[in-house]
Image (cartoon, rainbow, N blue to C red; front, side, top):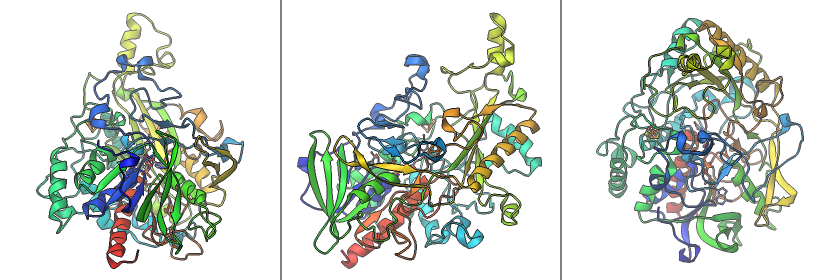
Length: 603
Ligand SMILES: Cc1cc2nc3c(=O)[nH]c(=O)nc-3n(C[C@H](O)[C@H](O)[C@H](O)COP(=O)(O)OP(=O)(O)OC[C@H]3O[C@@H](n4cnc5c(N)ncnc54)[C@H](O)[C@@H]3O)c2cc1C
Ligand code: SF4
């Protein structure tokens, strides 16, 4: 992927976009509409088409591909620069109790976390934008589902999302012709569906950013870019270069055939093809600079290849560095006008950080034993899920917690790795020799995993701030986190675990245990630590009152009108739905607003 060096940059751009992950949607939208954009990315350049180890077997990797401290998701995982700890870029904690700590996963590479995310692409529903109006807790967003719906359609058509319209409560349908057909449910999902139906729990096709068929380059581009012939032409070419999934490889490694969504295969190539985008990699943005009128006029960044400080100039700055990094840049952008960080007159930057509530359970299902060898696992990720189904009971106050969760399934017969067969002796009673081989075949594919993904209500105890002492390698102050799960999240996780246990019992299975002990807040709780689900958002929430929020509904900061936030930082709540599709839809909407304001000459 072509990138320029700092020396090759133009003197000034229309817009600087910081970060190349899902928030990179911003650069796509702006360049397709003709704006000149400079993207600054702290990680190295990365091209999935050239670099993805798509067909490597686990046997070709050290430790059969097992996760290590450096590569927690396995040797072949797409993250080439990042993890729970990033060299030279520490973060700190206010508290020592794990229940009060936040774990921060970062990807330092072109495309950020979109190279290896699980690609679950759910829309927030109408209730999710007005939670306070429903139950008095948290904050209403300054917008409605209807405001964002056209942008969800555009994002889904652009990136390609499989799924189905099921007409369920607060689980929005897409417009006709938008979704790709879903793959048939996996064997364990079909079994779960059979036993969950009598329990009143719906199992429906998951929405995931994977192409199950080729995109139609004649039909989709005019819908996505009406009246823009150049954008349609570029997008049609980009779509024709994407293939449909061939159901064979783990999506977490990335996809050389561009069948799944990564910013590096879907957003950046057409944006670059416009000729309107320059990208500088290894550019660590430290702060936003302001002109004498208090408007943003650019950024200061560290060129990591030389360690030198550089400046870049633009009419508008959009921060899409991933929610917490955006917060960090803002807090580090101190000036006489904003001694507490740029656009921070409310004092709310860093407040109301949210993650997804997580709890998981593994089980062994005898009905799945001794299946004939088959290869029907399909796309490298789930095909089905359970949307939250107890809205009425919850609103009636019968559950003891205020917000819902959805259920994701794991299991199947993927390529054996280091962990395959681990713990088999508790089922085989220590068989060996030929019997062990028979047992390994009998139990392979009979294990199932249930993960709950729930809504977190923003609270005062979950925040980040600048550490007064610790700095990163480039002398930039780092973030210090505090975390607090309220009783709502604690009880919700208990409910998840109870439900999973009931389902396993109904399936005639045997519960094996909870998710990893190091990931939970305590040995006695199923609840995972803050940040562990890697859905962190908030920290610069949007609202309708400048005294109680950082941005308006377009991610435009109240204090500095030409400073936009186009990642998860402005989320005013974190519904159970995985956040990334909403990040992209908001970024597209914010970019349209930005373009309209630029045309009016507002900045
Ligand atoms: C294993 C895993 C599975 C996931 N599964 C899902 C899922 O199924 N569904 C879902 O919705 N979400 C999922 N997520 C979360 C999803 O990846 C994020 O929500 C999404 O990538 C956020 O996009 P972003 O652009 O804000 O941040 P990122 O994708 O992290 O991109 C931010 C980019 O900004 C760069 N950057 C940071 N700081 C600076 C700086 N100071 N200067 C310059 N550049 C900077 C980073 O290097 C990075 O490339 C998953 C995440 C992980 C790790
Ligand atoms: S399973 Fe499909 S989408 Fe996923 S990496 Fe393989 S080909 Fe690509």
